[in-house]
Length: 180
Image (tube, rainbow, N blue to C red; front, top):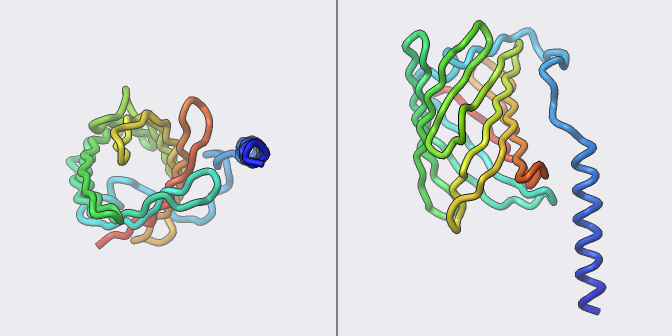
């Protein structure tokens, strides 16, 4: 009986993994959803807040969080100080240093990021990819982020980050950013 349950769980995992592999993330070539233009340096300069959660591939919410963000822009470098508070009371600070490398391109670093993060704006959309040793409840886990952001209004940004490990999607982070 227990063997059948384990076999059924393994089969369900394989089916869900195959289905999520078929549904890929957006593409920068997709038609913009609005006539707005996202400029990261404008949106994140000053104070903003974010509310989000991480869901595993089965849709189970694993963790929720709030973030207080302070952004400074000097004409070339956007520095983001992110103070996370998780639903279990744990806190974390991540400091991003993003450099504008072209009209619509960015590169950046933060503690735990392996190499450089790279990103590109296109209309109301921004795509940001990086590998990071992400703090988790029992240490760290090396994962890849494929972050997608859409400017919903002048003061609201939707973020959906596809998170994978060893090339297999393990979940998603969904976040709403709001300018203060």
